Length: 592
Image 1: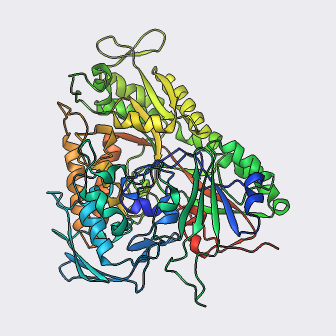
Image 2 (image 1 turned 180 degrees about the horizontal axis):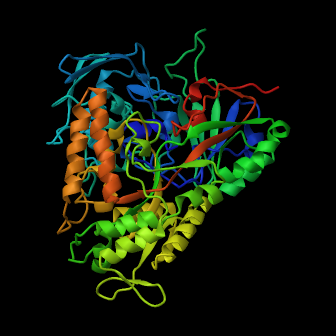
Image 3 (image 1 turned 90 degrees about the vertical axis):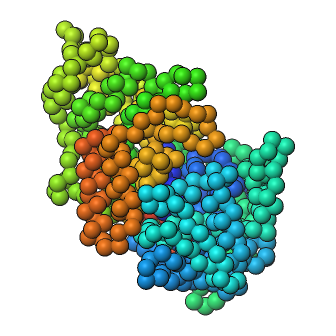
């Protein structure tokens, strides 16, 4: 998933664009016969997990949506914060103290008590530890000074967080996974032979999965590289139904590792699969097979998150004095008119009509359309409807020129040509990129496509070694979830990534005035408790982004899911990237 609760932890988990929604499913017969008597759900994931250490994870797919919980969770239909490990919380009148009360009798999957000590350890020793590169820490930075909260134990069941100033999103950040102090504390206090904390190499994917201690609905049973991850019901999970029966109901979940979307569709059609996150091309194929296949297709409305292309605006050089971006291209990318011209050149309506078969909507904002803070075009948000002539006029006014063959050159005679980095595993992504290539050709620009393995793509983005990239990021209703991407100090501020801990030094990094304005707006929005005032603040943010277009938002697909009719309890919505599994603890298999 990009599991929606991961988004609320402030991570912008990168999704392989439109290739798969949540966990789809497959059920190889060879594995099925090994555990035929065990109630199980067979799902699939696109890649191997990168780590079994939740605090160090910054990728999707991952194992943590099924294995861990935080103090709170979020409702997959409404995004409302709801109790999880904490049964309640209290916010002080001055909004700077939040006290959480844990449920009574909580246990880890190994039977060890889960107490306030684990919460304090998780935050104080891990998330707030500057020696541990956890993405969660950025979500906890507050105000102009980016100060961090403090946490203290009040009793075995109560912890208190003290904030440097009021911070509206803090409650939502409490979905961050709680970690077992009795298993991990020593690794935080000791170093390896290279002087690094042992925690940084603890619980990698080479660890025996049965040794991973969890607090969520499932534990890891086994992991076979490039084949499958198997989850088993956590016998000490806290949830029970109204009759006192332990939850979750499904004993085992098998996540087969399959990176090909077409293969998943074939297996679903053959009757092997239990769940399938549908691409738009799958919908027309499968809709008429619902009765025969005994499954139901659900429409979850617009998918959460954003799909976009991003310009590399970084003017810095590496430790060897080499620019991350070709200076010629950097001049183009850092010209506002150039970015706007690209936006006008893209025929996004055609993407919806031809590639999404009409099942989608235009995306014009960095905030998901489901959010109450979303500013629509009707409310005044600037949009870039397809207008090649407008694009040419902007380029020529900025000093670009056309030759007799309609090719575009800059004022120094350089042919305008650059590369688009995109995930190789997404057929829709490839189709959209190809159309964008054709659209840019109409205004004289040569766009070279560079499809790469998803992990390679993420690495290149992190190394700042790209011209433009094309991805989807998960999202939610809280604008501050995007702070890690939009604030200049954020670890995921990809379009102008600054110095990062543990990386070689960079020189000449420049933060533009409009980036500073976004910083100011995010800080102001995060401490404003009046919702109407918050809406005005985030409206300004959206206006800045659409005017400056460091990224160009494209389309929002409609979230679709197919599930066999013997799965009961599904509540599917495009709002939550966990899709049909956000309430996995409630799902039942009722086979006739």
